[in-house]
Each structure stands twice: as C-alpha cells, then as structure tokens.
Image (cartoon, rainbow, N blue to C red; front, side, top):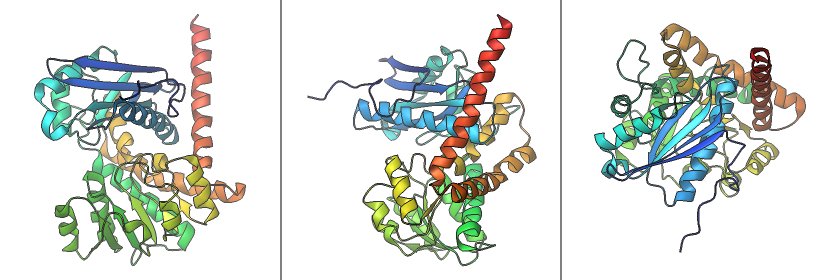
Length: 362
C-alpha cells in the first residue's frame, strides 16, 4: 500500500506561496500547480505532462521545478516569479483536447497568479488548446504577442553558457574542437546540438530514442549509450534530459572538467555541488544557464514581443555565468551556491519592495 503523499514535509517544499491540486474526472485531468513566489511578478513556468510513478513523485517534481523558476527569473532580471505545473498521465495516451481545455479552466481559476508555458510533454500547439479556456498562457505559436516555441532560445542561452565556461575553465575563445557530450536530444538538446555543430564542436550524443541519435550521427557525432556518456572523455558534459543526473554515483564517474547543460534540477542534492567543486569540475548552475526559455516568454506576458531585445537578454546569460564563475573563484566555493545567493539577494529585494509598496498603499 502506497504511503499517503506529503506536501509541507516534502524535502522539496521551499515556503511555496500556493500549491493547488486539480481533478476533473470527465476529461481525466489530474494536475498540480505550484506557485513558489510572486514577489517580483506573476509566477511563470512550464507545464510538464508526464507519467509519474507516484503522486509523491509528481508533488516533489512540481515543488522543485517551481522553486527553480523563482531563481531563474531572479537571476535573469525578469519581472516574474516562479511557478510550475504538472499534468499526471501519459502524454501519448492521455492527452486530449478535452483534458487540455479542462487544464485551461483550472488555470483560469488562479486569476493570473500563475502563467503556464511549454515543458516536457507539451507543445505550443497544446498550449493553444489550453488558451481556449484561459489567457494565462505564454509561448503560443500565434497571436499578436506570440513568442512561439521557447526551445531554440533555451538552447541559445545554453550555448552562450558553454562558451563562457569553456573560456573560463579551458581558456578557449571558440568552441571549435571542444568535445561536448549531450545527454538528451529532445527539443532543447537537439537545438543545442545543431548550434554546437555549427560552432565547430565535436559532438558525443546519447538518447533513449534512436532517431535523433541517427540524425546527429550523420553530422559526424559519435553515439554512445545513455548510461555511458557521463564517463566519456569530454571537455563539456551537457545534461539536457530530466533532472537528477548528477548524483553520488555519476559525479564520481564524470570525466569532463565542465558541466553545462539545459536540464532542470541537474543536482540530486546540494552535496553534489560540493563534490563537483572538490573534484575541480566547473558547474554552470542550471537555473542560470537554461533561462533562455523564460526570457523568451517574458515579453509575451508583458503584452509585447520584440525578438531583438529577447536575443540580447538571452546572449547576456554568458555574462551572468562569467560573473558567477568569477565570484565563485574569489569566494572559493561552488558556482551553485554563488548563483543561489545572487538569486536570493534579488528575491529578498523584491519581497522588501512589495512589503514597502503595500505599506504605502495602506
């Protein structure tokens, strides 16, 4: 018998402002929305459609992801808070227009405190169906301020982060000849692989699906097994699949001097950040390097979308990481903890400003 799921005692709970559970039997909707912070603006984050093994796994995932979104938006200097949503089910079997519209109605009841975007198992076309029932959706494929699929912008930001890491750690001014191993060739991983190929990097790739591996093999990439890539002799290991890849086992097997990828929540725990630092591995904090997607949808949420401005902000991810790396070197600690401190400093400032504004209004 499965134990009853927990929320407040979950290790992933980080003083979230609001966690809401939605159920509609007629459509089969089972969803959770977690609002971590609205200090800087409405919470925003992707909707993940996934066949979780348990309700507790879904709860922990949405809590971790939403807290990371607060950090991500804060570091990127966006007027947004952090949130995330998960739909429990198999997207290949359970995703229907009726379910997506039901999810839209659920979002609408939150009154704009959370804005949904694309994530694993969801596409901009799916979000367009969700938008039939609510306006609190971003990353749409069409409309007056539509920003479209954020994946290419996430990949571009990760590329800028890899460039910054390679310059800082390896002294390389370009990525030509730099060996990068990409784990996960989904929307973001594939886009990143193409950008790296164009930059002249040597690619090693792994994915559970053979088709994307075959595509990049034709471009000269070496294909290895998913379980083997972490131990490959790489310059950069780029995790671009689901989270938790950096655990007490994989960190010890790692051969690359740099970890810089698109996956959310790459660290199984903060202890792995410490161990990476002890081993001399430069870690690009995931919530700093993969902010391109949220930067992309921020303009849409504001009611306008200017591509040039978005690209400028995405490209600035490289400078943000450079600042993190330099501060980490001065303070002799992991970039993970430096990035956390920088994000929390900005969140604290936003919370203080909100309290002061409320006091003046009263």
